Length: 88
Image (cartoon, rainbow, N blue to C red; front, side):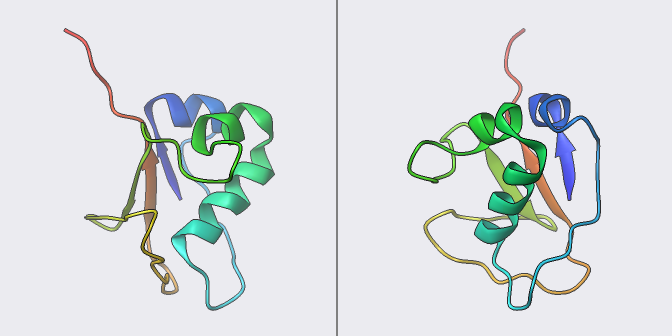
């Protein structure tokens, strides 16, 4: 898992290897890392119902994952979680 921008600060690391039981969806992976890193990351990633915050983007390789469509991960997939950067 690679973290970028605000998500990297909340996770405290730029990247890490995460193991999930197979089959594992990107939704399960996000939940796993949110729980692993505690409230600062969890509150940034998911809402009270466990849904991805609308401001967070998740990519599997170079393909954006949709939260409402379970996406099964393959061994060694790179998942990137980021919050868009705006401003001028």
